[in-house]
Amino acid sequence: MTTLTLIGKPDCHLCDVASEVVDAVVAELPDAAAERIQIVEASIQDDPALYEQWWDKIPVVLIDGRLHAHWRVAPDRLREALEEAVRDDALVEEKEQR
Image 1 (cartoon, rainbow, N blue to C red):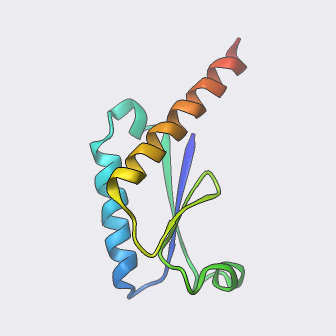
Image 2 (cartoon, rainbow, N blue to C red; image 1 turned 90 degrees about the vertical axis):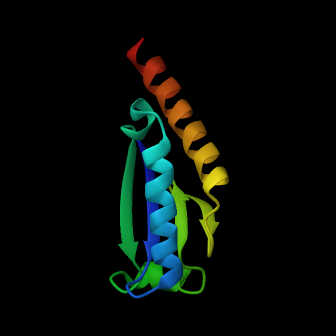
């Protein structure tokens, strides 16, 4: 499973835009890929550690815990990164089943 984490806060226009981009990109992926993506939303207002690390960069997108983007999310770049992450995840899972 690939985890996409969107870090933001309420009443953040760029966060709302980033969420819309994430939703649109995942919706456009083939069902088999989209089903392998878990979207987690986190707020810097609810977590002091997230606030300390990311307050000046929100919205932030992490893919499997690694920074993908902050401030603005480019749909094409996100699509490519998610496709690669899902592909890599499927390969690891396939190896484990052998």
